[in-house]
Length: 142
Image 1 (tube, rainbow, N blue to C red):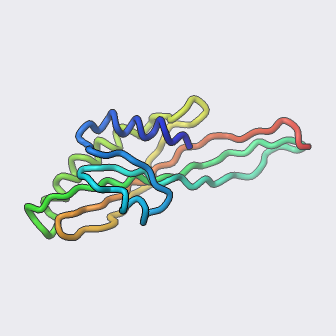
Image 2: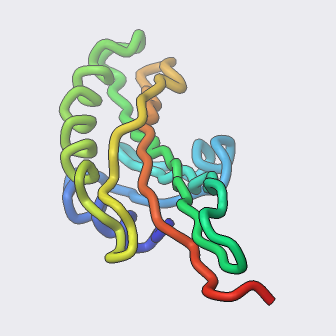
Image 3: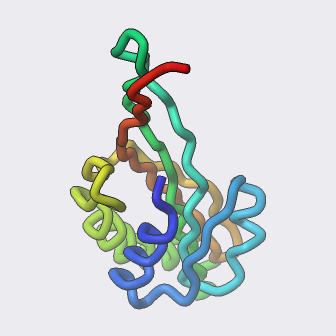
């Protein structure tokens, strides 16, 4: 996964975000989100397909990653106000990443689902999940 271009894409396409970062785990992502609204890329998990060649390597690799959006709106401590703010950000995030490729050797990003992570005291954390794909190759096996 090409992390730097993906961070830059989110940062430039969602100008209202006060923070855009990345983290290797959900726990570290939540700890990193200090200002709102903000986004944090959960580091991708790669899933390699079977090798398709004999005496060489050619594998498709799916990179699955999440983007956590964090909004805080204390006008309503039950989350309704924060969810309205989230409803504005999520379509922008999805539009910024769908059908965009982080590098020339990667396929366009597709949507893989979503999950509400946290909602309490006016803070709402939401994760949208995405997939991109690339290939790893070695022409000869040593």
